[in-house]
Length: 356
Image 1 (cartoon, rainbow, N blue to C red):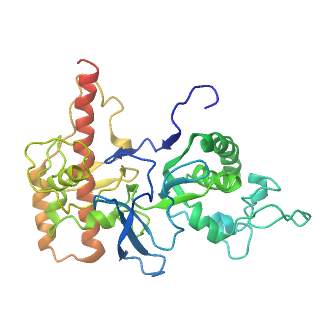
Image 2 (cartoon, rainbow, N blue to C red; image 1 turned 90 degrees about the vertical axis):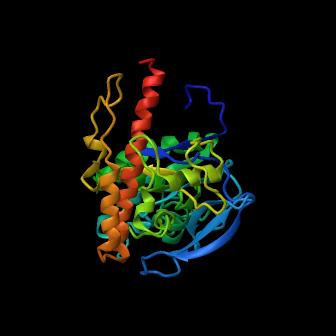
Image 3 (cartoon, rainbow, N blue to C red; image 1 turned 120 degrees about the horizontal axis):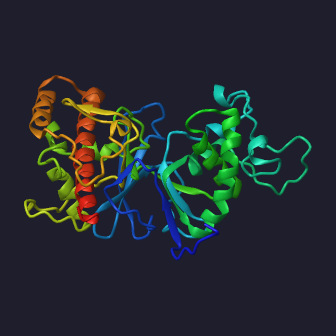
């Protein structure tokens, strides 16, 4: 970032395995009103699992987040960042303490952040400096339990990135697992005291989770029957209900076949984070199974048998499954009926861009 000219004042960072359904914007709570409160299926902590929705001045629901979190700031600016709420929580902030999780019981934060960093959960024994802020487990859970989508001011990125780069290999030395870089990010944010406004609405990812940190609640409300998550989908076209919701947001999705009234249409997550394997009705979408040369002039779209999917969804309604079992299957179908048409649409656009 120090070797190029950046004109934008706000930058968003997403994972490469994310597909956008809605634009990422710097607007957070400005002109928003809380309109509803709903619980998730995870009842381990009823208060923490309470969800609230925020609607804009046009009555469209834009944001979903847990009610216990700090107040949503109006917009992204220097010192105010936002991101997707992740279930990593504030585990690292208990590092070295007797009640820490196994992976963090012997974890040394000082080796990662340095002896006078704000990411530490307590001052070193020989430190008499009382001016340094130390991060509690609660602060970590409320402000730093973040993952992509990350949104911050350009100035804050320039301050944060060197710390993230330095901290990640130090975290990996003590925690040699996939999430080391995410923990490195959260510790770097705590070190810089850059608090993130956490929301659940930036993604859906794991159909099996009942955690309120993903916006599956919005997908579970897709119509009265299981078929509504895929009805109208084609090999290169999203389902009718999704198009209806997109048109309600006014994002310019044009399709003459959809003429239904969009008033009261439900919300959509910002991205589909396809970091899982999705299986339904003999269809599979797994990022490591996609051909590396999928995007080419003679490339063929992924197979998509919507009739088979609709039959399976019809059977799901009649199966007697209920609760989380039925939700998981319906969510799997939702991901299949969005990821495959979207990647096929991307292939079509690639061929146009390359003058194939």
